Length: 267
Image (cartoon, rainbow, N blue to C red):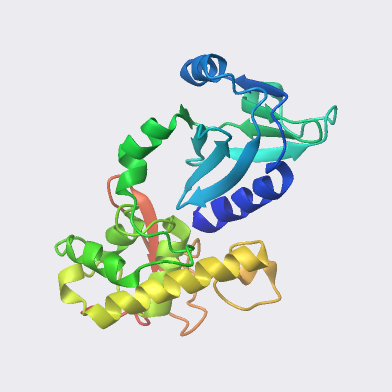
């Protein structure tokens, strides 16, 4: 499942490949996107940049037109040379942005919108996003303030709330709480500002490390199967103390939370 690190890497890769190039062909399986691309003459426009905003990916074209995509669980972008065989079947294609040198294909992308500058400013989901953990200008104080607005909620649920801080997904949620030594079912009201700031700092660090490493990792290990502390390890011994890792479905989406009862204290 793509999280902030995955989308950040994808945006950087797409930006390096596409920025400064002119769109020579465009395909979409989204009727509204196809309609706007035609009425605003997307083909012929220069791609100015591709950037991540939390788990959202924004491809900006000359004139301010923006292709907004969200990968949800299974979406992904691939890059190919013109004429190169795709690694996925055409039936999985949702978007194609082609230039003279590169073809970007969005496979199984569930959310796509082509936004005018006015649409972008008014976009409810994008406007509501909390500070992006991978943004160099990240505002930790603002993130803590937004956390405090959910004082009665469990910290595990608050970390997943993209309106609090953007970029944390289910894997990093469990890993951050383990590294912070905090039980996932602790209410925000029971945590100090120092606790919240510590979790935020850990989140920023593990996301940045995973971006640099090119793969999701929260611990140093030469074993590629041992790069995480607790996620996906229900019933297995804690890597730190040996206590069996707990797993429980939580939240509206019934996502699994993993934690160590010994290493993560209740407040």
